[in-house]
Structure formats: structure tokens, C-alpha cells
Image (cartoon, rainbow, N blue to C red; front, side, top):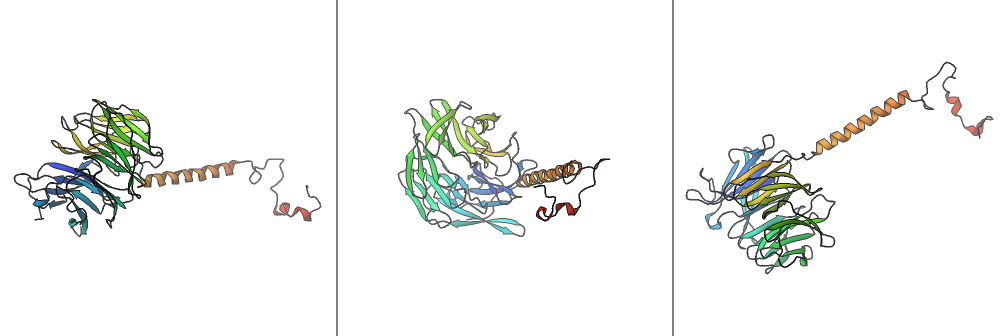
Length: 385
């Protein structure tokens, strides 16, 4: 049954940002069932001025009992739809605009309906590829929205740990619970290379660079209790460096939409934000989810804010103390300011210059040349040539 949920909602199991338009940011939360309430989807509105969510959900959607609790989301870049993973498979949810707000419309996707619980879900940046990695190790990559299969690998590994798609939608990286990592060529539908590691290393979380200039792959690598963030060059797939940032087990890795910051959530509930350019920590939020493993860490699409979740503390919105991202209108305003300043400087120089075209007339200086001075020299007997 689908309809309105009750007030005593269950604990948050997953969440994600939704960029509906330039002016509206939403957060979708999945809630597990409890004794008095079935599993739910809640949609909240984000207020950038207060860096907080609306006190009550804009939309509350009841998930069918037979589907089970929501496990994870993949939001389409358009902001018009998202896919939710449940125990039985995946379902599509579309936004429908109404006079008094928005509504969620649920749809079954035949190729995804009965594939079981999916550990990782991801859309490509252009929204034309959709990938899912199951708890059973099965990797599927589809063309969106036709759902034509691009890659179907039932025995990718034992079980997925993390997954990401490159900025150009050419590669997919997947890590597994056994510590291995593999690169896949999406359009060809084949595995390309496995990332090198030593026998006692485990590659865990992974994210591609996002700034469009540095073709890197970031992965957290654990060796015993020591953890480093390693970097691979995606043109050669060679490891080119590493940095020990927080020195404790990492549970989740994220990267901002502009590629300037990495976010690392830890097993003990701490979070740190790293500037990619210098690979130094810009902000460390200790005890953000006190004593609880951070399950999700996701940068806001427009603001310097992160969304994080844990089993005990639910969803937390944190404002970052880092330089704000330049808005598009601010860039245009700055360019316009430079242009107007250049015109002003040119005008001042023109008015005060001693140039051929505009020179001051002194007491003994002849008057400005008349138009006759610029006649064709070939027709004059006094040609300077």
C-alpha cells in the first residue's frame, strides 16, 4: 500500500541531495520500518540561508511492505527522478509538479525490479549511464532511460564495497569487500584493468576527480590499522602518490561537484574535508556522528555543505568553513566589472594623453592638423617619402 505515512517514522537508512532547479535544493531520506510505521521516503527542502532542512517533509511516501526498507539512492542529474534500492531490487521515483507543491510517482523498472539488494548505485554525469553493484557481486550497467544493457557481469566479485563513474562517462571503478579494485570500460562493456596493490593492502573507497583538468582516481587504501588516500593517473592507471590524512579507518569517500574538495567519513564518526589542490585538511569535524560509523557523506550540489548519515544519529547537515563556490552570476558580474573598469581606464588615458590624436596645445605649438593634412601623399608635391 502506498500513501501517507504516520508521524512516528523509523530510523534513517539512506539519504541524498536532489537539485531540482537553480533555486530549489531537496534532500530525500529513506526510513526503515518500525513497530508503528512502514518504510518511508521523506523529501525535505534545504534552506541555504540557515544551512538547515525544513522541519517537516514536503512529501512523505510509503514504500510497499513487500519491498522492504530503502537501502540507497541514485539521483538523476536532471533532478526529476531518482532510483531507490530495496531488498527486492530497484524502483524509480519521479517528481510530478502540482499547484500546491510536488508529488512522487513510483514506477517499476522491469530489468531492475527483482535483482535483489544493491550495495552501490550511480548515474553518470551526463545522465546517460546507470550502474548498480549488488551485494552478490553482480555488476550491471545500463543505458538511460532505455535500460539497454551495456555490461552484465554476474561474477564481478564476492560483494561490492564502492563504485564511481568518471566525469566523461568512459570508465567505472569498483572496489570489493576482498580489497581488490577494477576499472571497467563502459561503452565496450569489458573489464579494463585491476588496480595494483600489495598482498596486505585493501583498496576500499573510490572517487574520480571532477574538475575536468586532472584525470585522477582517488582511493582509500588500508594496511592493517593504517589508512592512506592514494592517487592513480587514469591515463596509465599507475599509482602516482599517496597522503596520510587522518590515519584512521575510513568508511566513506566523497568529492564535491566542482572537484575541489574530498570528504572522508570515518568509522568512529569523525569527518574531514580535504582541499584537492594541496591535499591538506581544510576542516575536521570530530565526533560528528559520535561513536558511530558514517555510512554516507555527500557534498551539496550548490553550497559548501555536506550531508552525512549514520545508524544511530540519522541524517546530519554540516556547513563547511571553506571558501564558497563562485556562482555563475557572480562570475559574469566580475567580468562585467573588469570590462567597465577597462573602459574607464582607457577613457582617462585618452583624455590625458599626449598622443598624435589628442595632444595638448602649448603656447608656441601649432594648431591641430586639419583634414587636408591627411590627403593622399601621392597627390602632393611635399610627400615625406
